[in-house]
Image: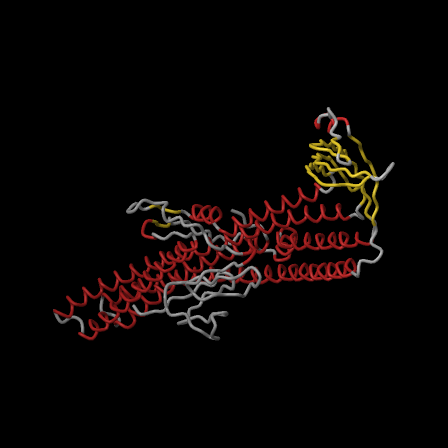
Length: 511
C-alpha cells in the first residue's frame, strides 16, 4: 500500500500526517523528509527549537555533548548476538563517552588547583648546598704587603623557610575561587550526563518506533497478499473483474516497497545508535523491546507553573551559572589585593667551611700542620637568621588596575549569562509543556480514530467479501486503518518522549 509515513517530533511534537515534514536547521528552508517510518527530531539544550534532519545525531560539542565513545566493538564475539536494553546503552555511553572522561579529568584538575591554593597558606622549605674551589694569588695588607698563593676548597649549606602572613587577601580569594571552580566542574559533568541520557534515550526509542512500524507494514502486506490471492482465484472463475486484480497487484507492490523502506529506516537508525556507542559490528547486537510509557501522568506534568519553579530550583546549569558569578566576584577580590602590601616572615640556618689544599705566603710554605675537618666546621660554624619582610607596590604601571577592570567585565558577563540561562529555562519548560498538552490531545484523538478505523475496516471488508462494495472502498479502508495504527504508536512514543523532555528541562532527568 503506497502511503507516507509520518514524523514524530518529540519535543516540538505534533504528529504530521502530511507527505513530508519541514525541518528547521536542515540547511534549506522547507526541506521535506522523504516518506519513511516515523522519525524523531532531536534538539539541543541551548535552543529548544533546534532540530537536525532525520538520521543525524544530536551533537553536543564542548560542555554539553556526548562526544566520542571508546570503541566497544570487541564486546561481543564474532557471530554471538548480545541484546542491549536501554539501561545497557545508557551505562555504556556514560562509561565510555569522551565528554564524561574529560569531565572527570576537569574535576581532577580542579582538585589539584584547590590543593595548590591551600598550599599558599603553608611555609615553604628550601635546602641548598654548594662547593667552591679557588686557587691563585691574593694580596693582604694588615701589617704589610703580603702575597699569598693558595688553593682552597669551600663548602656551604643553608636551610631557609618563609610564610606569607598577609597577602592582601590574594591567597584567600584564590582558595575560594578554586573551590567554586571545583563545584562548577562537577555540575557541568552532571549536566553533560543528563544530555547524554536524553540523546541515547531518543535514539533508542526511535529504533523501537521503527520496529513497530515494520511490524505494522508487515501485517499490512500480509493482508494485501491474501486479498491478491483471493482475487486471483475469483477472477479465474469470473466472479471478480480483472481490474480489481490489477489494482490489488499494484497495491501489493506498493506495500512491499513501503515495508522495504521501513526496514531500511530501522537499520539506519540502529546504525546511528551504535555509532553513538562506538559499536562497529552492529550485526552482533540487538536491541531489546520495551514498554512504551504513554500514561499522561497529569499530576506530575500538568501544572506548568509548578514545572517552571522546579526547573528554576533544580536545573544544574542555572546553579552552575550562579557559581560562575561567585567565582568571578572572588577573582575581582583577588586582583584587588594588588593594592595592598604583602607581609611575610622568613628564617634560615646557614653554615660554611673551608679546607686549604696549599698555602704559600711571600714564597714561604704556610700550610698549617693540622686543620679542622670540614664536617666539624659544617657542624659548628652555624648561624641563623629570622626576619619580617613587607613589600608594597606604590606604582605597578597600572598592572593591578587593568586586572581589576578586566575581572569586573568578566563578572558582568557572568551575570548576563546567568540571566540568559534563567530565561532559557523558563522558555524551554513552557514550550515543552505546550508540546506535552498537544501530546495528550493527540493520544485522545488517535485512540478514538484507531477504534473507528478498525470498525470501519471490519465492516467494509465484510461487505467487500459479499460483493456489496467495490475495491476502491476496501483499499481506502485498509489504508485508513494502517494510518491510524501508525499514528497511534507514534503518539505513544511521542507521549513518552514529551515527559522525558520535561524531566530534562526541569533538571529531574537521571539515569
